[in-house]
Image (cartoon, rainbow, N blue to C red; front, side, top):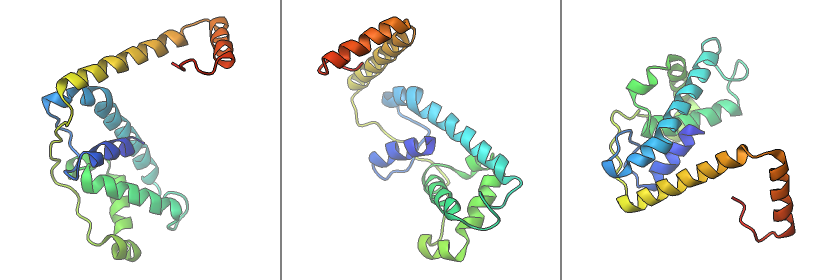
Length: 172
């Protein structure tokens, strides 16, 4: 999921690749989204590496649809986001990826696969004032969610009843 979030954000910002270095204007993106996504990606890849330490394929002892899906997801990450330095932390995932990509049927479709060597920086298209506004809005929303989670069950029930009686009320 973390890889999908990173790929989605950077693919929408043009085909400049994925970057860990961000400009000063997009530091709020790095703080709130990118760093947690990268740490979640590392956790996912370490779990996958643990499984692949004793298995060649994900499910059984031959290639399945799960292996194809995983390889395509890793392909997008390796060609745009994950450098050799990053993937060297997960040797079993790296072995699995290159084993799958070098299969004849994969090489027919994907062609020659090259892992990205350098991640170019991504510049933000939003003005700093817009980013500050978005950051303050996200903080307010998280504070509302925190307050709501600390409410008593009776207040939650009353809020649900009010919303049910008047569906035009906002759902925050």
